[in-house]
Amino acid sequence: MPRPTPGKPENKLRPVWQAAVPDHAISLSWSPDGRFLAAAAVSGPVTVFDAATGKPARQFPGHGFGTAAVAWQPGGPLLASVGQDGKVRLWDAAAGAEAKVLEAGAAWAEKAVWHPSGRWLATAAGRKPRVWTAAGDLVRELPPQAGTVTDLAWRPGTDHLTVLAYGAATTYAPAAGADPVKVLAWKGSPLAMAWSPDGSILAHGNQDATVHFWYYDESRDLQMYGYRTKVRELAWDHTSRYLATGGGPVACVWDCRAGPGGPEGSTPQMLDGHAEDATLTAVAYQARGFLLASAGTDGRVVLWQPANARGPQVGTFAFAGAEASVLAWGPDDRSLAAGSGSGAVVVFRAG
Image 1: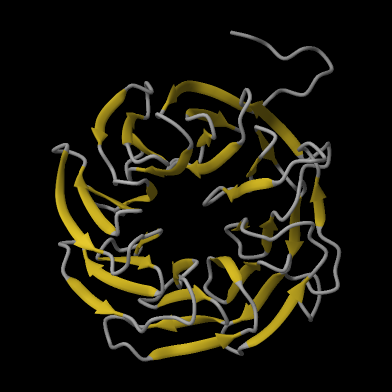
Image 2 (image 1 turned 90 degrees about the vertical axis):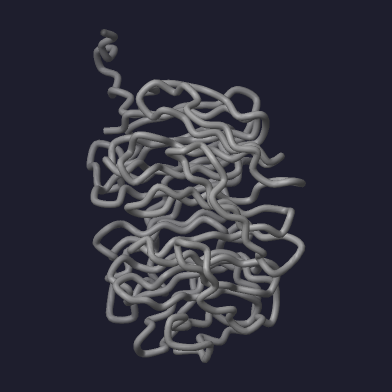
């Protein structure tokens, strides 16, 4: 068993296994019991790996022209995928077979998000969001948005779905009807969003290199500036206090209780562990812990413990010759999966 070099901090990001998909790893999703990891290649194929060994357990063809996302049903056997053939596909991972093929509503589909109960699946294709039952029945086609739907998210603790598109983050109650519950209007192009775990704050990163921040019940907003690039990378810690963002080579951690006005005007903690010319591709907090992972175009995966007084960087790994493209924490909160632009997939033991 290797031991840390005296005087050198232990690397707490320890690879367990490494495998591969045919090309760029675009999406990762863990099974609810943590036994399997699904990895989608951008060209289409979806591989289900045994999470203990890294050996392929199932192979699915995915989508013609390319797969965009995979999402495992919470508490259930289904793996959902969407792609550039305009289909939503439900795979029975236990049987190794396709269970259902659904029409997403446009020529390409890019988003698929299960409700935490596993009862409903929300998908987006072009400007059209749709909500389905786990059996594949259409619950609701929501109104077409002002632009392409860039993200979907269920508001924690509710049956409400938030749809992000040009000019607004719009929240619906799909089981009740197609009328909006609330419209948070903003003149701009939002790209990605994240709800705080307590459901009180919605943050979205934008094309204009800003992060917008909404106190949902009050419809009160604020904005954080100063990013180098557009912001697609957002992650909340489990306390709903800290928001990590990308938008350049540095992970910024905002204290959202910094003052009565929230984080606006405060200085974030700057976690600088990637190359100066890199751009972050993902940030991800543990679901119940305080570890944060970041991935970048420099191929690095960095593990952070932001509150560590001896230094927040506690682990690192580098993919050879390709960007680190995607991250996903396992249900045990100790297994971290990362994919790369070359198709490499690694599972780490973290902490």
